Length: 378
Image 1 (cartoon, helix red, strand yellow):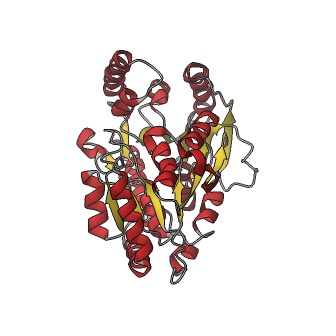
Image 2 (spheres, helix red, strand yellow; image 1 turned 120 degrees about the vertical axis):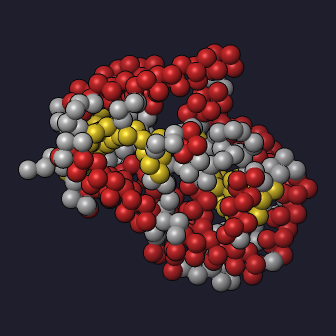
């Protein structure tokens, strides 16, 4: 009998992370695989999930998580004797290498351009970050030779030519796709969803309140207390028009989904400062805004501008040019019918092509091919 046990592993992500749990794990479960997810413990786990979730201790200290979390993960994963071990964090590369045997498959799911990301992190001085990035690249190259690579972004193919793209497109939310926005646009309310950091434009989004005295900015996603305080300081006297949901807590997908239909949003925001880490990424939030029929207002990075132009689903601006930002906001407010049309064009693009259902087919087909190869002795 074919071993169809699959283990997904993360020490970093929330157990109900949209890509890991709602997309990959549930898709594989529905395709007939025996799926187990090993992730940090969370109060959001109800015990009613459709797959088995084994928890490890949630460690906030990076070093403790790297060492103790990896050891605990290895012990739990090894005991399952899976056909496929699919892991989601670079810190798990060593233990994934230890789990790799002749008769199983190990998949490294690459969510980020980690080498660039390490250099961008600001918790260490730049020379140390550059050294760590080079060490990471070397470790990754050595330890992942016999692993399969799963790529969440198209441009990662330039870095990992042998990787298989399973893109992080959204699940089709039929309620959102059917919800027409005619006459709903308020002309005032701007939305941001996802984790909040300075390199994801948190302070730029707060500054919008000083650029335009009419708009309100609503942010849904995890935000540290210090950053929330900094955003409020950035907004200054206009901070009463800034709403942050998710201060010091993980915001479940269901709560964010509710936000999409809670108001007639003028635009979905992604005014990020220019960094190598994000300039080529097709942000997941793009597709979620599009699914909800919300026009996008984002930075004018070449790849982002190409994307917005292709689907005619929003506007791009220099994130540091207050005049251009104000002009873009004024345009959306003065042309509500065009703003709605942008949202509808985005919604159609998601319904037709940019959705998880298409990626799910690729994932399930790839798994079947990998297991078939093992059974045939490849």
